[in-house]
Amino acid sequence: MRSLLSLLVIIAALAVTPAPAHAQLFAAVAKAAEPAAAPAQDTVGPPAPAPEPDQLGRISPRGTMRGYIDAMAQEDYAKAGQFFDLSALSKSDRTKRALTLPVIFQSMLDDNGSLRPTALLSDLPQGVSDDNLPEEQERIGSFTVDDKSVPILLEHKKLDDGTLVWLISADTVRQIPKEYTDANDYSVNKILPQALLEHKWAGVAAGHWVAMGLLIIAAYLACWGASSAFFYAAESLWRRRRADTPQGVFKAFSLPVRLYATVWLIIFSAHAVGISVIVRQYVSKANIIVAGVAVLILLWQLIDVFSSIMQRRMMRNGQLGALSTVMFFRRGVKFILIALGAITVLDTLGFNVTAGLTALGIGGIALALGAQKTVENLVGSLTVIFDQPVRVGDFCKVGDTTGTIEQIGMRSTRIRTLDRTLVTIPNGDFAAQRIENYAHRDRFKFQTTLGVRYETSPDQIRYLLMELRSMLFAHSRVTRDPARVRFLGFGADSLKIEIFTYILSTDHGEFLEIQEDLNLRIADILEDSGTSLAFTSQTLYLARDTGMSREKKEAAEKKVADWREKTGLKNPSYDDDYIRSIENTIAFPQKTGG
Image 1 (tube, helix red, strand yellow):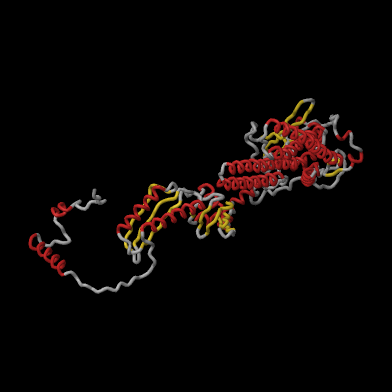
Image 2: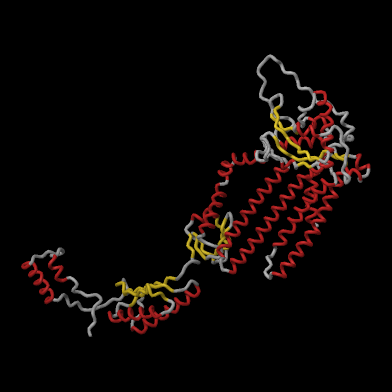
């Protein structure tokens, strides 16, 4: 019953408009004051200023009908008469009909007429241009005279002072009879006690308000029972035919359908039993709001249902990175729904939403300047989501932070570090930083440099190169290209041998196992070669210096003397003939003897 109480609170707060009680409807017509004459204007002096906006609010169709309803609720019939175009009446009839016309018109609407809710009428001075009517006319309802349906038209007219206003058209006024008797056999006036007819609230018999309240309760209970039975049967039938019932779908439709059906049942029932048009118009605000809220609730719950279905499907398919996109769009669409709902409620309650939105547009620059970081984070969120450098569940490094992405929100991204702390980074900063994503790595690099002792002979180095290469080629979890083993050169304290390859694995734990196996096999090969890794040390050799070889020195000096005598010493320049004579005389790789 909580939803019932919420509905009643909304309707009661919006529908009940306090106004002082007055005398009986038709009895008060004779006592109504004549409209005050306009003050005379001087014929001499400066030109009259531009006309003021209409004080009765008749500048738009909505303002005209709202003003008429409010005037009738206050039983100000002289004021209500100013919302009719009396130009088709003779001057002698205008004064009298100006007082009786509003009352008769209301009685006809109470009995068998229909009037569009004022909140749905145009609030623009020019009205609606796409209703298949002349630009100066607008249809707002109808009533019945002699079993004939008569449209209620508003017409754009210019007053004597030049002000353009909307009035109930002269054609409609012609169709309103001078006298009218209630012909509705089901009218609440015929079943209400006299006490509830004599006392008035907002210019209407109190019984009409009581009847509307009882009608709201009865309509909701009827729709609650009917919708509960319908959805129970529909869900049972669905489960018998399909095993995979979408969770939450029927629940998502239950409350919105119940509220929406209640609104329409209230509208038709109130019209059928002849509840006053004033009561119906005030309650129409609540009807529009509740109908709009029902649609928003339906969309809100469907967003939750389908996003949950998509999340479960992505988790089954292992698409954990797409979860952040689903969550972001769910929040974004919900934010839009809240904004649309707020605009609808404010417009229904009579606030000038257009002016408010215009003011927001003008103040948008100031708002943007004051919310630069917020806008930056929003743009960063869109960048992270659409570019997808990371996804939820990815292990990555962002700046100096390393960890697993836990959540990508509209404002920030959360990272669970290796120390199990939670780091929150604004998306504006996140998108601008250097991001290293380890989750998309297809293999791990294996690179190490062995430093063997200087006592290692060249043949031992050749043995190491051959055996290490053979081991890499033979290993099933190592790439063939590259599988590089090279003797790099002579270091300060060791002979350098580099090993470079890739390990075929995407799991870090498995990579460590394969790396451990490779290191142990390298250690075995070093052991078998008879050498070992060098320690960082210095070795001091003490030996008698035998000096330079005199024979080799003399041979070298003699060879240089021959070059000077025969061809000239041109080092470092060489003749082309000489280069051709020695070209490719050193073969690589060296050919081994048979």
